[in-house]
Image (tube, rainbow, N blue to C red; front, top):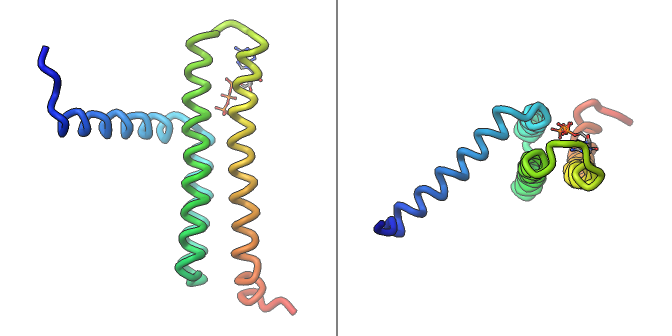
Length: 127
Ligand SMILES: Nc1ncnc2c1ncn2[C@@H]1O[C@H](COP(=O)(O)OP(=O)(O)OP(=O)(O)O)[C@@H](O)[C@H]1O
C-alpha cells in the first residue's frame, strides 16, 4: 500500500490528537472542573486588566494543568487495558498519575494567588 503523503500524514496526526482532546474534555469530570477554574481565571484576568506577562504565566499554568490531566487520563486508560483486575502496581501507576495532576494544580493555584492577591487587595479596598 502506498504511504500517505507528508501533508496527509501530518493532517491525520492532528486529527488523532484532537480526537484525544475531545475524549478527555467529554468524559473526564476532573477536566470539567479544570475548564471551569480556567474560565474563572480568564474572567478575573480580563476584569483586573492583568499585564501581558501575567496573562502569559496564567495561560502557561492553565496549559500545564490541562496537559497533566490529559496524561493522567491516558495512563488510567492504559492501566485499565493492561490490568483490569486489582493489582498493586496498577494502583500505584494511577496514584502517581493523579499525584502529577495534583502537583500541577497546586502550582497553578499558588501562581494564581501570587498574581491575583494584589489585585484583590486593591479591588476590595483592603487596608
Ligand atoms: N486495577 C487497579 N488495581 C489497584 N488499585 C486500583 C486499580 N484501579 C484503581 N485503583 C485505585 O483506585 C484509585 C482510583 O482509580 P480510578 O480508576 O477510579 O481513577 P479515577 O478515580 O477515575 O481517577 P480520576 O478521578 O482522575 O479519573 C487509583 O488511584 C488507585 O489507587
